[in-house]
Length: 384
Image (cartoon, rainbow, N blue to C red; front, side):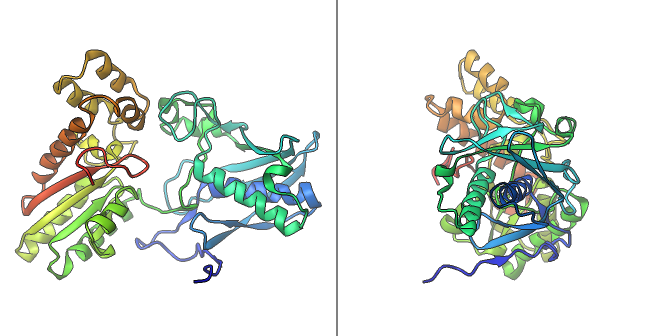
């Protein structure tokens, strides 16, 4: 089978909830890098560039605001962040890339003005590294390779060697509106994105659309559905549970609403549901242990305290419980205890407690199961 034809991702097509999609900070940074490279290597100014998306099929056409030559043989390019209809704190911000040859034979990343640096473990990047997540880094390496190939310079990306500095104007002020300071990311925002596309989720319109998705999932007298806060757990629902796509609902932060819509729909139809699965990362789902049903970071604390409380009740040492409480993310806590005796039993207990609390909200569901996964999709509790 041949390679899929590369095609443009059309941002004018609305998301299923009717809202406008946008570009992630990772896509913006990649576009800025690409525009800077064209000027650096060929003296070509581009008003727009194509950014290849991680799916390997689509690309975005991204407008370039400005390209300027720097005094130290570098080039800077600016891109305006467009988050679509998502209430994104970086919407409208200027994301910029500065590119310089380095003679080191590799592509190296640096945090410019307004982009943070990781200072604590448990994040997607190592301590001391700029807060540029793995997928945006890969997108930018791909962009370097594409420019070199297009310009036919005969250089491999790593052989050429570039220092890539990514920044955000007013990024330090923007970051204060996010969880970054509490996560140990200092100095600015993070460059994020796993798909390159911002899916507008965290709005009242999205809550209304969840009811539609729930009703579709339950349609045709379906007896098994799965609700996912994000993409983690999607493979489990498809490959292990064997659920059709329509029976899997991405509920974002709105677990309580999704459960209420489920109960309401089942009451209207005068029936029950055999099994409801909740699958995802404990950073979202474990907030239920603290009575939180809207898991958006602006409306809830992080879940480490809840995890630590269960660990205490299960007899973990006071010192280890304190480490869990003081972890900067749930992922960091997971990493800390993964080799401890009783770690799997802890997560099974947490799964069962979440399940019991959620089940109380949907009595017409006969059985409610919870499966927790780390960011890489590995099962934490009950073996997947």
